[in-house]
Length: 101
Image 1 (cartoon, rainbow, N blue to C red):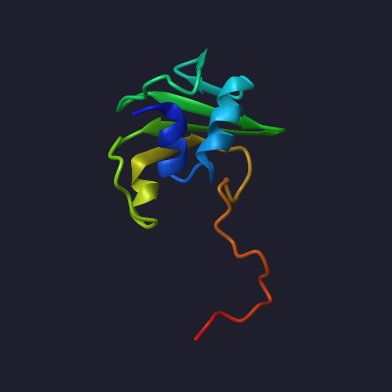
Image 2: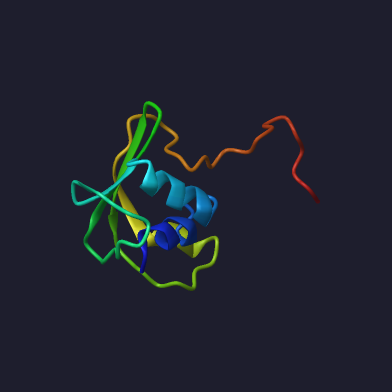
């Protein structure tokens, strides 16, 4: 699977176009090498995503294109994340807002 599509399907990056731009900008590495958007990612690859001062490093565990929101987190295992929570953010945008009934 292409790295830009993997980042979108696994929900590491919200949109595929943003993932492609990140690849073009040199912010995505696969096994220590800068990746272009069309680079194929395989199970066992180590991917590094850099945005500003944040760096997320994870290992690819699955490359299935059909994922649900809940199963997307099973596509990778986080190796390094300097701050908690690691992005993508898991906290709600407005913590004071009541959940819908």
